[in-house]
Length: 458
Image 1 (tube, rainbow, N blue to C red):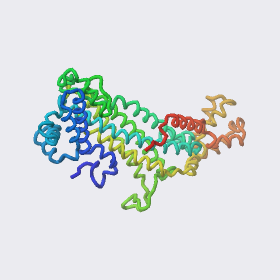
Image 2: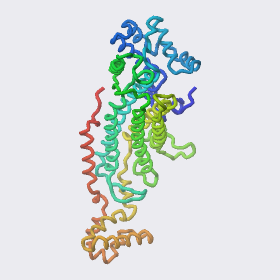
Image 3: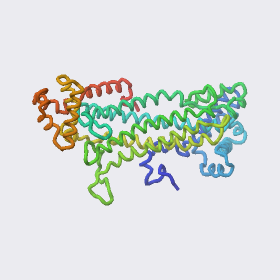
Image 4: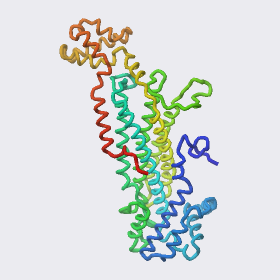
C-alpha cells in the first residue's frame, strides 16, 4: 500500500512522472544489479577467471522477469542483507554448477553503487531531454516578446521598464548553463566501481583492474582511477546539479505566480475546461501549476544537502553514509521530472498580456521614468543637482498623490531645462528599454550556437 506522495495513486502525478518512477522502481533497480552481475561474469570469462559457459548462463538468466521480487524482499527481511537474496535467486536460476561463479570477487557495494549509477544515467537522459524542451519554449517566448514592454521590479517594487522577452531570456541563459553543466558532469558522474572488499581488487588477483575496466565498458560507464566506495562526490555533484536546475524552475514558477496575481494580471498559466480553482469560490482560476513547480524546489534542495552528508564516510566504507543517497537521489529525480513536465506545459500555453503590462507601466504616473528624467536634466543642471530636484518631485508626487507627470510640468526648473514635447517623449516607457531587445538577441544566438535548442532525433 503506497504511503509516499511519489506513489500515492491520487497524488503521484503531482510529484513525479510515470516515466521517471519506472527508472527508480524496484524492478529497474533489481535489473540494474543483475546487469552489473552479468557484465562482471562476461568480463571475468574473457579474462579466463571463470568458465565461459557459466558466464553465458549467468548473463542469460540475469533478468528481472525471471525472479520473484516479493520472495526476494521477504528474504532480505530475514537475512538482513540487501543483496544476498538476489544472488541466491540468480544462483538458483543458473543451476548449482554455473551459479557458483556469480558475484565472483565482487562486494555488495560494487554492485549497488554501479547499479545506482546506471539508474542515474537513465534518469539523466530524461532530465536532459525535458530541460532542452523547456529551453526551446523559453527561447520562443523570448523571441516573441523581445520588445514587449513591462515594469521591471526590484525589491518587489517597480523600478524601470524592461521587456518580457528580457525576463524570459534570463531564464533561458540560466537553463543553457545547466545543460552545459549536465554534459560536463557526465564523464565524472557516470563512473562505475568494482574494487572488492576494501577497493584494492585483491579478490580478483592481478587482473582486477582489467576486470573492472571490461565490466564498465560493457555497461557503458567510465572506469574509475581508484575505488570510490568512500568517495561520494559524484553523487553529491549530481544532486547539486538537480538542486540548481530545480532552483531555476522554482524561481520561474514563483515569478509567474506573482505576475498572475489579480492586481498585476500580466501572465496566466494555461486554463483547461473543467479545471476548478476553489471548492468554495467558483470564480477562482488559481495558479495551481505554477505553485506546483515552485513547491518542489524545497525538497530537492534539502535532498542535495542530504547527499552531501553522505560524503562523510567511515574508513573504506560503511552503511551509514550512502543510504541517504538511496532516499535523496530517486526523490530528487522524480520531483524534478514533475517540475520539468509541468514547466513545459505551462510555457507552451502561457498567456502573456501585453496590454496589462502597459497598464501597469503607467500605474505610477510616470515615476517609473524618474531615472530617465534625471539624466535628461543632468546636462543642463548637473547630475547631483538633477537627482536632488527629481527626488524632491518624486517624493512630493507620492506623498500628495499628484501624478509625477503633472509635478514635472508644473515645475519651473524642469520647464526651463526641457521642452514640454521632449518631456512627454521621455515619459514614454516603451522608448526606455536600454539594450534589452538586443540583449535578448544575443542570448538567443548563444543558445542556438550551443546546440541545445535543436530537436533531438528519435
